[in-house]
Image 1 (cartoon, rainbow, N blue to C red):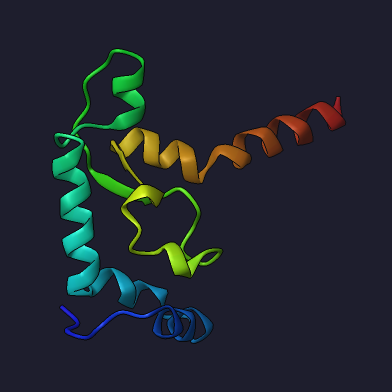
Image 2 (cartoon, rainbow, N blue to C red):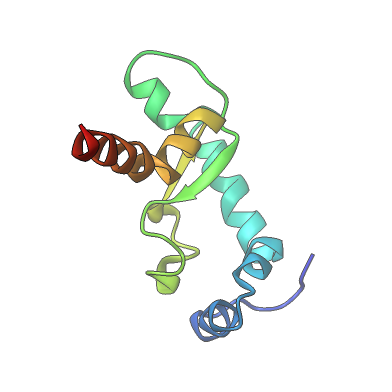
Length: 106
């Protein structure tokens, strides 16, 4: 665990150096991540919205860390997701791209 005060400048520096993962090792991140999980009762928010239960396995930045480092520790920019929903979020454009490529060939 990295023990330091997380600032936007520090996060930007880590991103520029290709070491954004360091942010996720900080005590500040763990604290806000755990608070979000507790607030959402350790459930996936997207599954709950459709009446399904899935445990929260990832706390996701709605506006990505690299795009908005100033919102890195803003609990309102976080979303509890299960493994499947988190995968779908990060790969949502891949399936569309594959469909488009397939359509172009035929």
